[in-house]
Length: 226
Ligand SMILES: Nc1nc2c(ncn2[C@@H]2O[C@H](COP(=O)(O)OP(=O)(O)OP(=O)(O)O)[C@@H](O)[C@H]2O)c(=O)[nH]1
Ligand SMILES: [Mg+2]
Image (cartoon, rainbow, N blue to C red; front, side, top):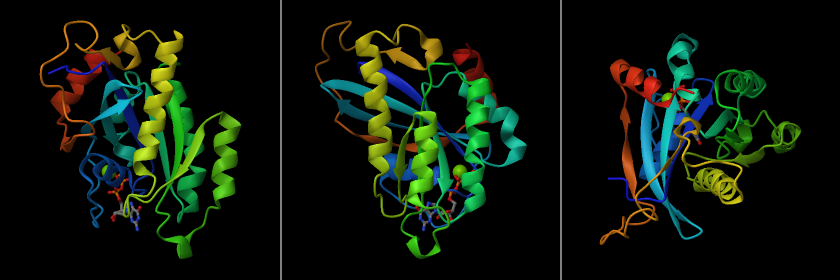
């Protein structure tokens, strides 16, 4: 059912093991998983939010950080309006590689994509290798917001998704983004177009992430190509 004002498609990228799937799980399901169950290709989760009186459905694609899945994950960049670039604050190499992920997105995504940099695993402060200031400087240099999160405790996780959704919504409001252009990773729902539904969805209701098979990847690719 498309009972929302807008649907936004976001994508999460970053090195393997930085906590991308855990961030999604915490956001959609308020849960944490201790094991590194490496993502195969792309997984998917969604959650409804209410922002500035608008019902927003976030459809989030969680990509595999492993190099071998690059060709699959790239096909998801194009239809996304939000890119979440994640590194692990206890792993300097994953921070050094954020530049590489940024270049990837720039090369394959639509030019309207909003991006945010996320330093994850801040609950492991004693093992920190990347200072907050370094992350902030990198983000500032590119004009992005910077967040530090813990997918384990849930600290700041909602703020990442909410802030990006707020920015996208503001761009629609100012006319910078045309919501009728599905190629940008935005869809207009039935609210505001047709009559108001009798039973609107409960706010912030999570739905569990699911794994997407290769066939579904192909469908997604043709759906969202720009
Ligand atoms: N302490 C702590 N551990 C975390 C946090 N986030 C993730 N982890 C752990 O880090 C490991 C990797 O997490 P995943 O979410 O599977 O990593 P990923 O980035 O999705 O990895 P790929 O799917 O291989 O790209 C797991 O053992 C998690 O339990 C965090 O905020 N704090
Ligand atoms: Mg994963």
